[in-house]
Image 1 (cartoon, protein in one colour):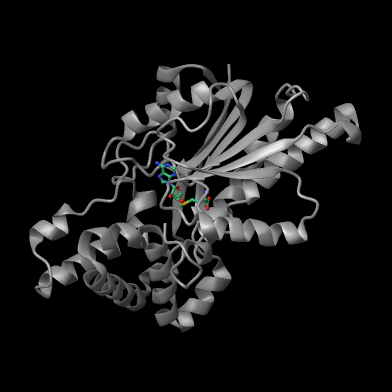
Image 2 (image 1 turned 90 degrees about the vertical axis):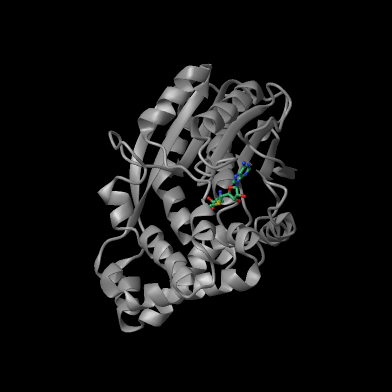
Length: 333
Ligand SMILES: C[S@@+](CC[C@H](N)C(=O)[O-])C[C@H]1O[C@@H](n2cnc3c(N)ncnc32)[C@H](O)[C@@H]1O
């Protein structure tokens, strides 16, 4: 993700992910309300894996903390709340400086702090915590990013094996990832997600523009792959079954609408600002990857072509564009 706080940063382009979090929140809360309460003798440890740095970074940890505090208060009274530690984890390239700056600003408002916080740099495809120390692990809009192009089952299994070691018995694993509906065979074959989605088609056109202008060759165009995979609920359930150690409480496929009707009406009058807004969202997600492949100059050109394509294609503003997510909560058994 693009760090910093400018127009193309993740912090300013994460509304869709925020909406996904809101949609899936009831599943998380319902899991936390049904688990057996953990002992109050030692701190409760929560982690957000793939937390990025932005307004969404703290939302889910806050939900977990509030839900657990309410449950403990109901059972033990306000005096014996357990201490809580929250570990914000992401790849070392994440903008942790921004994360801690935002945390400090948040703490000025939410004082006294309801949890101790730490940052954990590393890949969630590896072990990040000592055995049996995590009570609640969440991962939001992150697990569809693969460690390498097309390693989907291998990555899912590694993620689950590591969490199986780290999460205490009775602990919760809650995951929201980009996904596709049950029964769909391929992440690219589904009409609902791909054909309606401006990102994939228009981005291919932008790459083709660079080729047609003689700025890149075919090998360069074809050699760029985004290491992401949209799993179906069946693929996720099969992975959990293979690794064992988790009982799925709930799993759902959901659709997240990309833009509100008000926003679409606004953009219909000003397609150029629509093109810019879409391009910012795409850059926030993949600019670092594209830049590592093409370098900064060609990357600027690619995103400019993308912006032109989006601004001149009004078709998308007359469709309801959405993307799919698979959400599950599971208990460590
Ligand atoms: C789309 S952002 C989601 C951020 C935030 N959870 C949210 O909901 O807005 C995906 C995040 O996953 C992180 N990520 C991708 N692969 C990862 C990996 N192997 N280990 C840890 N984090 C990873 C990225 O660095 C990025 O910050």
